[in-house]
Image (cartoon, rainbow, N blue to C red; front, side, top):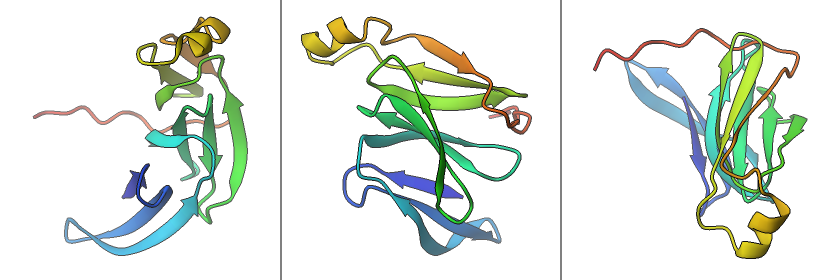
Length: 127
């Protein structure tokens, strides 16, 4: 299990799941630019995380190394998800200062790219 902490620690923490409970918390990586937001995992086990106010999605390897940056023409990416070999990136339009919106008029759009890796199939929620 992974957890992003935007304000207090600015890091992504990993947990080992034991009997359905998170155990053995460890820091995977700490970021310096943007705020951590939604994340997903690819088939290699790497973590993709959207950076609110960072205009990008970053990919971190299992050892916490940043190895891919996907820049988007919107300041506030909110989340990302795979559909086979495509990475979908959602962004927010609300709340930016007017000058940011003028520089990034595509804010609030959905972006898609082919990052060269695939993601696992979605697990339907039966809640």
